[in-house]
Image (cartoon, rainbow, N blue to C red; front, side, top):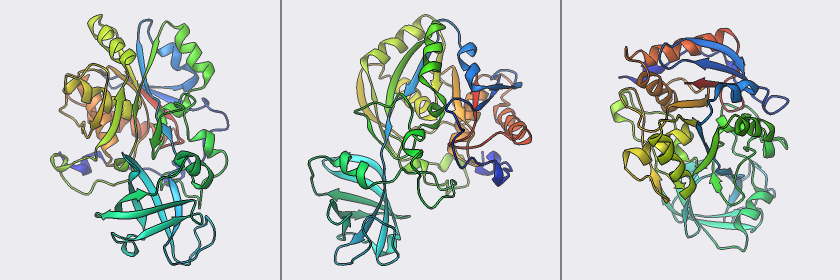
Length: 362
């Protein structure tokens, strides 16, 4: 299949630039995996779309204020500001351990390996130890007592490039974060956006339906920001992202599958993690990395239903959603059904992408 098989027209005005006024007020398109039929609904109805005994799995990774402004050592620039004089923009995309981070740097041509970067007048300092393509860099930070505390003080929320604002706003600190993000699960460079719709009240309503809720942690990284640069799906390679499967979630997954109960994933990050675990036969407590790419032709082993936002044209996430739709359709029309659902969403003026509306594919 070709990447262009997953293209669609999206009017720019449908790309949500801000979250809805109230968390949970989004619209929700219901799509039947088997027939391809769709129905308009609202996200607050989501608990009623779940069955007693379902297992709902969510990604509790916490988004960090990963966008930073630095100066190259020896150059002066305005304190913690994207000033034009010698400034460098750094987006931390993945923790590598031992103070090492993978990052995207702009302008990359000015930041070779060996360069030292100063953040907020020496609050943080890093050396570029490796330079890759398309602005990718590996940074080694000088140890500090509270690295994530420093990020909270000087960093900015890493809003996607299709949100056309010069910088984040105060509301993004809470609204670009799920209400169930863990206190010790820092590491994502982008929100697991399907989870942004949930409120504590909606989670309570889910539990009252007799639905079990469990969590995985997958830190959303570089793959979220990199466009597909090949023409054939067979040539797509995703970056590795770290994940953790807790013991309670592993046990819940084993029980649900053994008893024939549905596993409902919140978001594509959760879906990729669960399918990686099933594909590698690691249904036990552990941590690891995954670069799994799910596209039409893949047969799902763990996930039965998916809550997800609307995705970019020609994106790997749209391919994943199409794969799940195809997996439930004996006629293998999943891609066409999803593109038809997207066309309906455009016609009905749903809001797209991170701060937009959602789809429940079941």
